[in-house]
Amino acid sequence: MAKKTVQVGLLGLGTVGAGVCRLLQMNSEQINRRAGARIEIKKILVRDKKRKREAAVAPQLLTTDPQEILRDPAIDVIIELIGGVQEAHTHITEALRHKKFVITANKDLMATAGADLLALAREKGLNIYYEASVGGGIPLIRPLKYSLGANRIERIMGIINGTTNYILTKMSLEGMDFDTALAEAQAKGFAEQDPANDLEGTDAAYKLCILAGLAFNSRVRFEDIHVQGIGGINQRDVFYARELGFGIKLLAIGEEIAAPAAAAFDPATGAASASEAESDSRSGSAASSGPSTLPGRLALRVHPALLPLTHPLASVLYENNALFVVGNAVGEVMFYGAGAGALPTASSVVADLIDAVRNINHEVENGIMEADFQPKKFVPKEALFSAFYLRLQAKDEPGVFASLATAFGQEGVSLDMILQKRSIAGIAEIVLVTHEVEEKNFNRALGRIQKTPAIKELNSVLRVIGK
Ligand code: HSE
Image 1 (cartoon, helix red, strand yellow):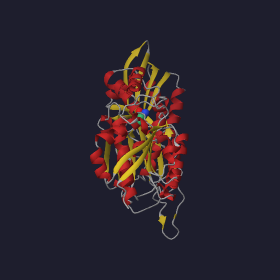
Image 2 (cartoon, rainbow, N blue to C red):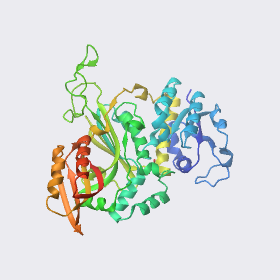
Image 3 (tube, rainbow, N blue to C red):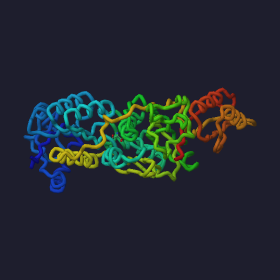
Image 4 (tube, rainbow, N blue to C red):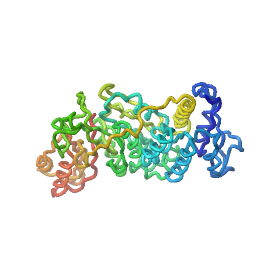
């Protein structure tokens, strides 16, 4: 029989936990109507009962003992908002054993152990909801899992770390230096506890594990992603990028490169009829409209990149996040909004709670599960394709451009743009942009350039993403 009241246990009452309490109070009537039952927070796990909170909660709801929540048979749903991996994993596993639905905003946990936890939930006839684990208030998990479920997703490209986007926007639009912009991002509260996780691309890579897993229907681990952070990006690169018509963004990119056409699917054996080509073939783009179900290979990366100012993602500024998705039926779609913050993240958590309550009463959520994932191969770093931007210092003398052009030409790298703005004390600053090239060829050309006597210093190498 449908429950009139569903009781919830909250693990954690930090920024997002307080946001959840505030939202449940703010929109209680509508939330209860949509859930089809009255939602009641029965207990809240905190570390310190005396701490001042950003939400009005009755003191008797607070407990420091997780078992009071995890073993309470009256509690049907737990919301895990304590963060970290180990403790959250232990609590969620125990909650599932005690037949509770789980909601979490924990990206590190879902990226590293999500598939196993989801399998355990399925085994128990339960579910784990994690809309808030990526992109704060932006709906991303449901669209990838359900709304775009009929598509073969060719590409996802996102700005999914607010801290780095804030820093790069401030450097670009206000000429602010890196350290001041980082300090502002920390003061605004969207940087990770250890901001190295933002700056080095780790946070974005964990989010990409989750998004790429859903988009490409495969299990993705952190180690499968090529990761580079925004350290070393200089005001001069931001300046040159704008001059050439680009912004610099930390991008998380996932692509499924279609299996080579020669490897046709044989319905009799269920296997590919030709051996898989070792090197990536761009001609076999994922845009194939044929009925092949042969898995492609996944190219996954997080790195700063020059992005044309005309690209929809280039207009995503400050701490905002966005995900640009290309599906073979829907075409291009983009999801945009606040990637962190108390109420935006609570918006996703409480939406999950509405679903969980409806599920408890009516079994509504039974869609595509991560347990249906197919194993896929990953494209090695050297076989990724990008265009490249380079800034270097060279002797201002005859033949320097020729030697650069020769070094690139010998490795089959074609140049797209060349810029020389100034020469100080006989040293010229040169900026080059190549056409799209396989990473291993570019690296060979770079090796040659570094050995060229007229080249005094290589300042920056950044990828350029054109579409
Ligand atoms: N540190 C993250 C960011 C917060 O800057 O986007 C949300 O995960």
